[in-house]
Amino acid sequence: MNENNKTQMVDLKEILYVMFKNIWLIILLGVIGYVGFYIYAKTTEVPTYTTSVSLYVKNTTNKTTMDSVSAGDLSAAKTIASTYIAVLEDDVVMETIGDKLLEKYPVDELSKYFFITDDDGVNKVDENNIRSKIKIEQVNDTELLRISATTPSPVISADICTYITEYAPEQLTRVVGAGSVENVGRIKVPKYSDGSKIPATARNGLFIGVILALAIIYIKYILDNTVNNGEILKNKYDLPLLAEVPYYDVEGKGNVKQKKTGLIARLKFKFNKENDKIERSVRNTIKDVEVPFVVTESYNTFRTNILFAFSTNANKSNVAVVSSSLSGEGKS
Image 1 (tube, rainbow, N blue to C red):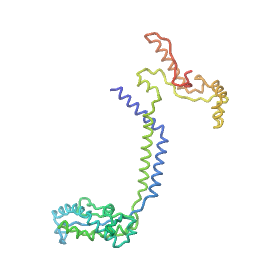
Image 2: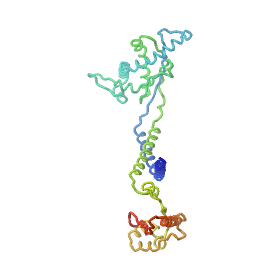
Image 3: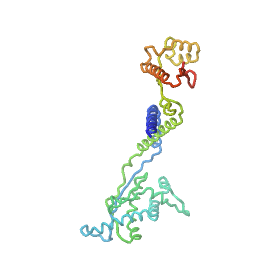
Image 4: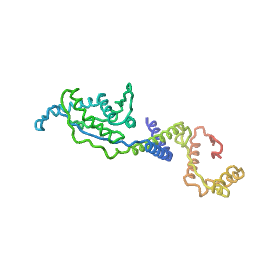
């Protein structure tokens, strides 16, 4: 159990390291997602205007004073309010609003905001389309109903709220047969559009870009079957690790220094075999002062461990093989 937990911790640490190592990809895709979604939202977003009105629900149809309203009347009004919402969202109410809109506005103008259907030669505004632009809700579980209409036209939004409040008493009395409603406040045409959704859309693009980058990095990590450190071999084959030499790069002499001065010089050096021979002939050894201390200590650790392994070997073997998977990996 402990070994499994240790392996999982090592894997998690390795994944976090890989994520950090590829932080550039996360930033790049995040920026691309943010900019892309921002441009898309900027070019496609249409400003909308919302008009709201509140209706006070009463349990009786008589106009009573506030002193005569009992707790039972308020409780009944709250119960009726939820019923009123269902009645006001019915197709009959939506069709009535559509007919009133067609009486006031030309079909060409309404077609910019609603779906217009042809019913045996008679134009009709799709009731589902109207319903999608209207929101009716009970305010904080009270006897108040808030009706909101949101369209690209501020005047049409105000007209929809007006039509609902005008038609609501008749429809509620006909269907419910009890209670009444009364307007709270006046319906005003909005002067300013609703808040833009562009920032929120851009943030969603940033989130999607980051998630995509993390998924790419993780899939690449899962499919990577190369050995990146000695712990992988130790955990997989349960063999002791004698030493692990870190990668290092020490600048050589002569043409090696010239190789790093520019792209053309590097290409010439890469494809010139004579220069390659010169590089190998002047390459530094691990005893040079320019070699990092951690590298020399790794070789010293390897020497100590291999001598200890030979001295404790039951078969008294004194032979070791140095190999590699590919040529040129440094086994010489």
